[in-house]
Length: 267
Image (cartoon, rainbow, N blue to C red; front, side):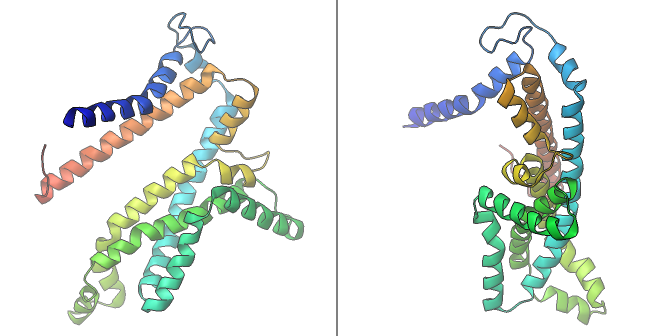
C-alpha cells in the first residue's frame, strides 16, 4: 500500500512539474521549435529584456499589484475590525456578503465591473485603463484580506483589549499594543494573497483594462494568440524562479521564527 501511495505521489509530481521543466529547457533552445532542442542560447532572454511591450506591462503589473495589496490590506483590516465588533446575526450576514466575490465566478465579476465602469464612463468621463484596473483589483482582493484576518480575531481572547484599558491604556493604545500584534499574521497573509492574486489575475483584468494600461497576463495572452514565442518561455521561467526563491525565503524566515519561539519541529 505504501508503494502505491509513493507511486501515486511521483506520478502527481511528474504531471505537475514536467511541463514546467520542458518550458524551462526550451527557453534556452536556439531555434523556435517546441519539440526539437537544436542548441543552447540565451538570446531569448536578451530579446525578452529588450521587448518594450513586455517590460512596460511587467512594470504596470507590479505597480498595480503593490498599490492594490496596500490599499486592500488597509480597507480589509478596517472592515475586519468593524465586522468583529458586530453582533452575531449582522456579522454572519456581512460575512456572507463579503464572501460572495470569492465564490462568484471571475467572469461574472469581470463583466459586472466592466458594466459598472461603462456606466460611470458615460457620466464622469472615466476611461478604461490604470484607474479601472486598480479599482477592479481592490474590489476582488479586499474579501481575501478580510477572510485572512477574521480567524485571528476568533483566536484572540476578547477580554485582552478590556484588560489593557483597565491597566491604563487608551482605546487606541490597547488596539496598537494588544489587538494589532495578535492579528498581524492575518494582515501579512492577506497582503501577500492580495499581491499574488493581483499579480496573477487575467479574467477580471481582461474586462476592465484599456489600450493604455495592460497587465502582464493580458500581454502574454495577446502574444500567444498570434504565435507562441520562446520569449514567453523565458518570461515564464523567470517568473517560476522568482516564485521558488520567494517560497524558499518565506520558509527560511518561518523556520527561524519557529526556532526562536521554540515551536519548531524538525523532520
